[in-house]
Length: 148
Image 1 (cartoon, rainbow, N blue to C red):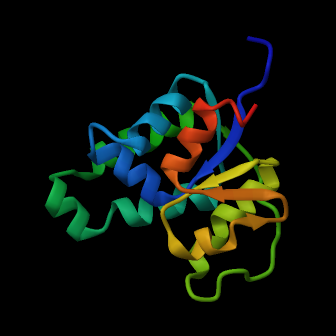
Image 2 (tube, one colour):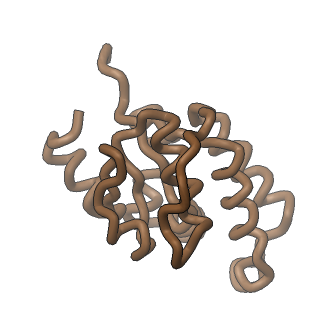
Image 3 (cartoon, rainbow, N blue to C red):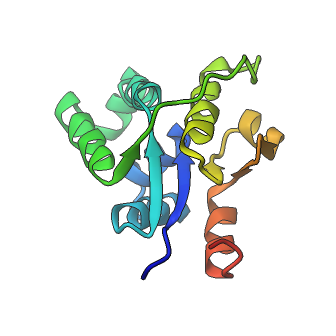
């Protein structure tokens, strides 16, 4: 396979859903990234946001996770990803400024897609040439060969 895999950025909700649910589109996307079929781009601010959300007491209590499991997950994701320097962007999503880290990462990485279930990101649909898709939309586009 000489073609470079599609470069993507996953919003935190994709990571959380893919981690806690053994089935579904988010788990499939994580598997594709782990197998090198998607080029998952990360930046330090994205990892910090993943950690912030994964460390929420409610999530920890509900799913019985601990700091060691969270660290192991983040190390696994980083091992199968491309670290990038995020672009400098102005405030984009006033209603949820933490979402801007995913856009900055995508622009810095030259990623074609941000995959998210977050309505603030999804309302953009496109940001500076980066398309925002729901997890099932990303999988459908990949399966149909609409994305190379």
